[in-house]
Image 1 (cartoon, rainbow, N blue to C red):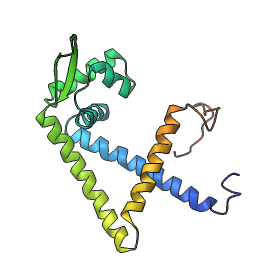
Image 2: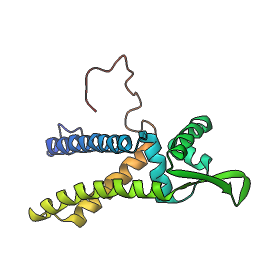
Image 3: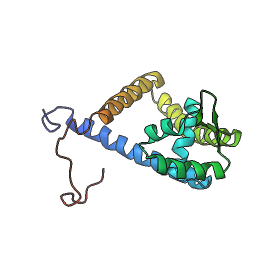
Image 4: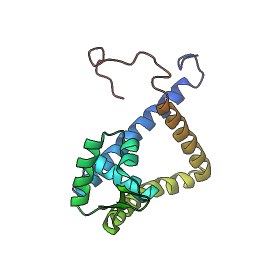
Length: 173
């Protein structure tokens, strides 16, 4: 059953469009905060991984970012030069390095999260005043996150023929 056959098709379509816009707004938010810190978006992503997960090896970061070792080295050089991360000898394998966020890196990520949290809190407070339940919203967002995460693990599970640039017309994501 496609969305035109579903009695809720228009509602579901409106939700998916709103979520895509939210994702794009999140990307713009991340880009602006990265620029304010004189970093690129990928630099900021690495810094967030380090703050969320703790110290990681360059190989582990490269796997999370889907980057080659050469690309990861250049990125780490940039972020280390900015003072937001440090490279140290891995105590478990002296042939390897461990990458850590510096206190300045942790403070930068905390600042970004505080900015993000403030914007989200305003919406939740307004929604709660209109009868929406924050716990229900959290459950739905976690379910959406799991669904999108599962979908990224399976390439083109829904559509085995992704559009090529030559077949794509003007269509917002």
